[in-house]
Image 1 (cartoon, rainbow, N blue to C red):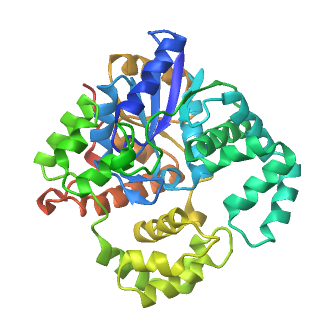
Image 2 (image 1 turned 90 degrees about the vertical axis):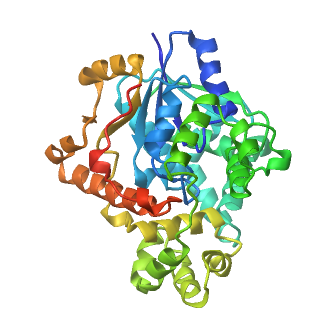
Image 3 (image 1 turned 135 degrees about the horizontal axis):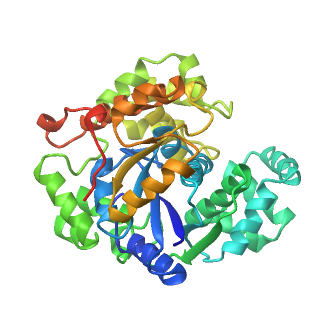
Length: 400
């Protein structure tokens, strides 16, 4: 039996996600086990997940995944590079990974891996530094540097979000020295951030947009059945939909921070921390903060992530160098068999009960405490604050 890994958010789980799971089994056999590394309550674009982590994990195992492991918070809300690195570390640490599967605009795993190798080479770093002196965004400078080393067509891969993630998966695999096969299928339907009007059935952002507009029935029709059922349960309980409704609390946190604390979030030391500091003092909404801090060089997603890190009290200097444990969010019968195998193969401790964290390393304990604090802040964005209680310390995996 082969084991395939998928790095995902399922925010929410839709038919495009389901198509990837089905394609994996069509390619490698119907008995292929699927392990997901899934974001928790916050996602890579610097936002709150629509539905809490355990609910999304339950929908995943009811839709064809076998085991869902948590992609820990610092990597889940990082750049594409950090997101990919964390996901690859989680999946390879199981000791079971044969195939890493993902969707991409190009559907060409060889081209993505070729570009990944170029980005990891010394020649690329020199070419990139030369391009950055021209004052453009990092993304534009990187694309021109790759074009000079490979070809314009390879460089163009970096202009599409899922191709870019695929390249980062390849880079992460090269760094950890793992050698699973890369399997990608062409992404069909909507672009990553398409609006509902041109999104077809395959855009998570379009589904979230529909819910924000009050078009509930239309949004639910685009979710897979298990996700629809889980969403309705969460909605009835007052825990969904979750949007970033804590604007004043986030602004209060930003205004309580010192310039040095903003600088600590600017790992590239490019001055963006000071731009956010100044914007937070002169703007009365989060959108205005981002607009005031935005320049040609700084993408909105990067600014949103920095604001989220500030709100959650994350500091790059305090984080572990790598993922320290594997936390189980959900598993079906096959997933439970995989967990049995992982007792012999996993490189990191496997956590099924939160209390087990107390016996792990100080880095592991600090990370879980950070996760727990963030989960408590996430709950304050529930539609019904009577549900904004409880603790991650009492959340066991979903085992349907």
